[in-house]
Length: 226
Image (cartoon, rainbow, N blue to C red; front, side, top):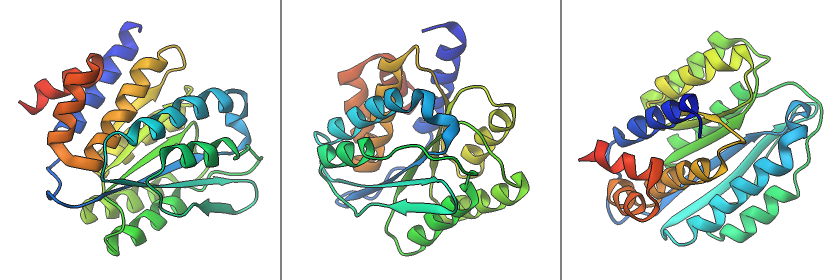
């Protein structure tokens, strides 16, 4: 892992460590949303492999339901049913193919807000590489999620300038965390995604346990919590 990626991962770990504890005895719900527009096609299979492993690993955490969401093509936005079966989610993800179209981040954030108001989601992951929308409108929707207490964990693939400015702001406004999606460091990315799943499933205690078991970036998270 190069120095720049390590710095970003450390910052992500620190941000996750500041999140409030989830109520004990409740089942966590995580919305995992992806940009499936054409710009992501060259690296789609690799990304799906890493993200699919996160779902499978989440099975061992217990107490976590996940809903897969994605946008692509002309005004296409879909979500799966809630499920606790990580292998089913990995299968659903592998069936999604990229299709040319504009980003729909505003629509995604509004949907997340609706779910949060109904107490149906505890955390959200968004994986994307660019933005083709009004950034002020996105900022407004992200701020609404912050008021609702829904943290968004944003993973950026590539180096799009607009995304590099906007995605960290989404994380900040929602009190979530941001990290670059680096294809050269898949193991660290898996651990960071696993840390998010652990938090959604069991709050801080689950994060501490996960960090002890996985080491690396996940282990550094435990020091922030202490």
